[in-house]
Amino acid sequence: MERALAVAFLGLIVIAVSVIFFLHANSMGLLYWRSFRGDEMTCSYFSGLALHEVTYHRSRMECPWVRKSW
Image (tube, rainbow, N blue to C red; front, side, top):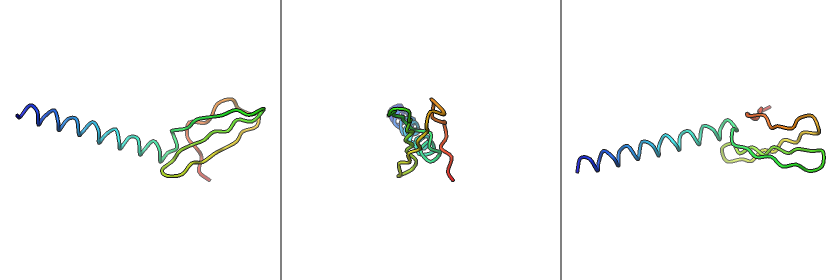
């Protein structure tokens, strides 16, 4: 019984740390994807509850890791 409780407790700790990391990564805008259209690259960042899109024209081929909030 004690072993089952220990495994359940460790499982809950792993889940809590994963959720906290996911929320922190979203608040910084680390989770993103990109799409190409002609000579434009659109970087879409998911931060918190909002989706932000930044468009670059031929100047870069990679999205910045962190979205700069202005």
